[in-house]
Amino acid sequence: MTTYKDIAVETRGHIAIIEIRKPPLNFFDILLIQQIANALDEIDANPEIRATVLCAQGKAFCAGADFSDPNRKETETAARSGDPADNLGSIGHLYMEAVRIFRAKKPIVAAVHGAAIGGGLGLAVSADFRVACPETRFAANFTKLGFHPGFGLTVALTELVGKNNAELMFYTSRRVGGEEALKMGLANVLVPQAEVRDAAIKLAEEIAENSPLGLLSTRATMRNGLADRVAKATEHELAEQTRLRKTEDFKEGVAATAERRVPNFKGR
Image (tube, rainbow, N blue to C red; front, side, top):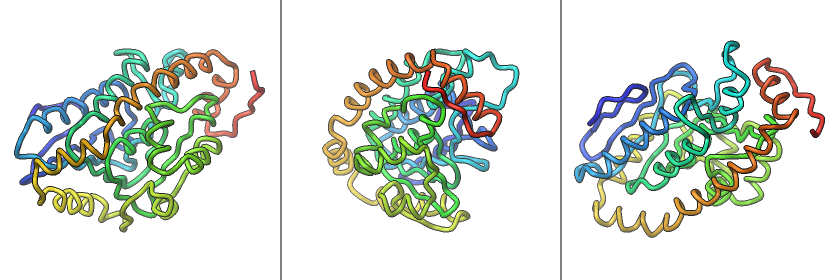
């Protein structure tokens, strides 16, 4: 496997483990998403691998955008809101890399041991299954930023948990804990925090016991058209994000998040 800057990839028998290594919060940018997509392409090309575990070092699975850098220009911070893009490209480019993850051919189990926020939620939802713990926090915090959801979540999250549950997460920007996530179908397995990765590996190994051709065929059927729907959704999401990024409310949402305070939105 290729050596990457922000992730590590190892194989165990018929499974691969992708570990995000940007602790403690694993804030992400276009380079990280591109590396994950590239690793999944390598895994798809390896006939010995039948399933993948996506996990992370540190406190969070992926805490989304980094608003803590006081030296970052406002326009750069804006580009990172909800679904961050770094200096290597635009949000649109990031979404192209995200769609590549949704096009991966083999089952993915996400080990979500901590926060999965904004675009980090999108990354968790791109997997087939999520192993969580009571301390896990899932949040689509876009409206709290004065923004519109991205990363294809308007399709992927809706198809996963149902329209009304997705609306609840979008409209409130609330953080959903592990137990509630299990009830709504956002998490598939709930274990103590220290056991999240092992449980994800165990599930991936259970999947990998099965016929590789059967797995590829069945997953292709079950996810038929999902990546295309996500790609189409990101076109609309990007247009709305571009529009809202110019508003005063968006600037206030970014500032309030960075300052850890309640935003004072004006509706303009």
